[in-house]
Length: 347
Image (tube, rainbow, N blue to C red):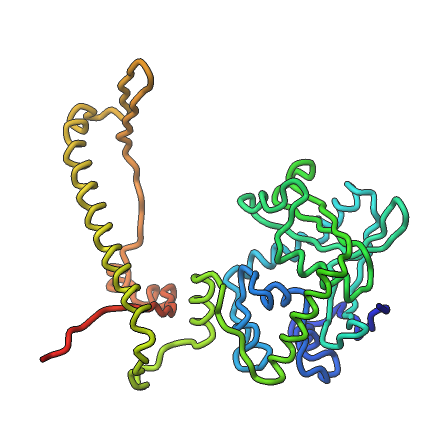
């Protein structure tokens, strides 16, 4: 291995210019690139992007989708200095800012911006620090020294580009550094690194030879959302597609599952109606009381009959009485949902 090449300093760049540099290098002379945030998507383990969507973006066939969690991403960016600060305070390691865009010494498509670098207090060895933030319900991903696979792939990619042997995360999900942060470390692993770059080499080949990836093994909701973003709104003028008989088995399986779901909905409705029927007597007993209890030798059966007030906007009245205000506040969104049905042929 050898030290990476510094392509440019990204400090002060506009976001648009930074994206241009990441996509094709600062001179625009790299046909296809891979950045650290791309690696998990290429491996099909990103929670946000499928391999096909990323491939279409890299080919210039579609633009990156507007991020639904843009505010969360902005918050994560703003929290980077804080997570870096407490990493230094908790570990004693020296944290170093680095705004350069780097290129791998051997794989010219591999580009990287690092959140921070660090210098280990115990021996002065240098490493790469990735600053992460998440919500409380994701805190378990960082328990007992663990970290998400999609972040591990990103950091191992960075270790390879930087040609350093150690990396660390500073992850935060609350405002108590003693309990709401984790600082797991990783050491460079040549076998994992070779596996990563073997996959990336094939990825670049697929771009060069127009071989798009499939949706195999991608979580279904992510795949459907991604395909909706890739292909956009439906076009009513397009003709009906005639499908091959090879798809009949899968389509009939979907129809059978839909019938099963309707049966379940009917059973749930029947149960709900029975619960309501049995509840009438207890509504009579509760009158204006909010809580009731029946104690047995082993447990208590609790009843709640609490008044709750909810408010909602009467959109019909708003549109009728204040049409200008309605026009200012109304918003629309597009969605596409697959629907399956069967129709008998006339004999």
